Structures are given as C-alpha cells and as structure tokens.
Amino acid sequence: MRFEELTSPDVAALDRDRTILILPLGSVEQHGNHMPLGTDTLLAHSVSLAAAERSPGATAVLPPPWYGFSAHHMRFPGSITLRAETLMAVAEDIVGSAVAHGFRHVLIVNGHGGNGGVIDLLASTLGHRHYGKARIAALTYFQLARDAIAALRRSESGGMGHACEFETAMVQHVRPGLAKMELAEATYPDPGSSYLATDLLGGSAVKTYLDFADLSPTGTLGDPGLATPEAGKKFFDAVVGELVAFIEDFRGWAIPGQPK
Ligand SMILES: [Zn+2]
Image 1 (cartoon, rainbow, N blue to C red):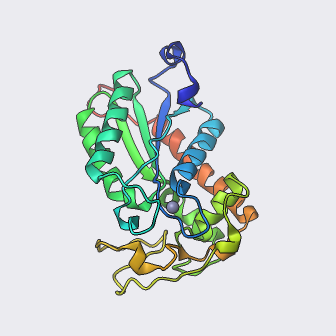
Image 2: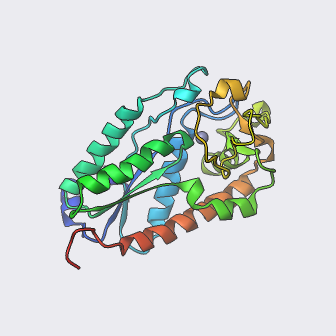
C-alpha cells in the first residue's frame, strides 16, 4: 500500500488501530563510481514496499523524504546532506501528522548508516512525545537482517561497507542495469585503529568522525565486484523476510500509557 496513492477517504476508512505505517529514510550521497546517489533511499523504500506487500496485516508505506544526514560524504560531488536537526525535524513532523490522523504504530525503516544516531533519537523523542497515543519504532534494515546477510555474504569483514558487495547486489536486483559494474572498484579501508570498523555488519563501540574521502579514493568501502543480481535477490528476500516478521510482531506491541 503506497500512501501517496491513497485518497483521503481511503485513509479515513483504514483500521488505523491495526495498520502499520512505515516511513522509509535513506540518503542522497555518493555511492562509489558505479552506484547512484539515491541508493539508500531507493533500497529502504523498496524493502518497505515489498514487506508491506508480503505482510498478512494492513501495512502502508509513506513516501520517503529523499535526503538524510551525509556530512561524511560531502567531499564527493553530488552528495546532499541535511543537518541532523533538519532530518529530525522532517521525520518528527511526518510522524506527528500520522499520529494526528490516528495511526498507532509507526515504523521508521532506515537504509543509511549515517542516519543511525538520528533514528535512535527519533525513536525515543517521538515515543516520549506520543506516549499514550502511539508506538514508534525505528530500525536500520541491514542491521535487523544482520545474521541472514552474514550467512549469504562472500566477502570477508570490510567487504560490506558502502556501495559494497551487499548494496551493489541489492541495486542489481531492484533496478537492473542501474549499477555500472565496469566502474566498480574494491576498497578494503583502514580506519586507523582496531577500535574502528567500517563493515556494514560490524559496528564499533567507539564513535568518531570518519570522512569517506579519507577512507577510500572512490568512496566505495568493500568489494562490489562480488555482487551479482542472483545474490541481490537472496539478500533482498532475506531482508524482506526479517522485516515482515518484525512488522507482524510490532503490530501486537501495546501502546505505552494506555489501559490494556
Ligand atoms: Zn548506501
């Protein structure tokens, strides 16, 4: 269910107590020499739509705001960044509108690592603001499906970071022909300390600013050469399966502050 294709009476007729509303978030930023700027939003939107379609219960997907927090990509032409507080404000206003219309369960599905801190804050800020009215959850889809992705990957640690084995295969599956594979180049970056990791599935306990132009001459982190459309389909199906499972669990979550 694409929210932007519904009419106002369609929304009025929805069982908003039971409908899960998804807000996809991503970014417009460099994705190496071979992948489009809109990769993260395209993928977050695609996995959200597929999960909504496969969910047994009613699930609607809001049109995503294209832009995210991408300060660390700005040395590459084409990258567009919102300030973190702008992204917060945009998402807060969208979710606030949805809650005003009676939606009880709103899920932010993020597809961009750089939005991670913002979506953590959104979950708690919005959860507090709408306490008693709605339940808000936020996730980054490749972290939700971390184990399934790990079981499918071919690269060693560092091979999945950005415009990598995973993202490239996903784009090959979702939008065949969009990735320019003849321009794909592998980079296994060295962030300079064993406390820091750039792998998509890794995650460091320590946070610091890592400018992508210092990590990789092309902006790619990882090995896009290992990507294939077939692998992309497997990654995509695994991610959507995990997302459907979460959505159905989330549908049963109580609204905090409401009598049961
Ligand atoms: Zn990306």
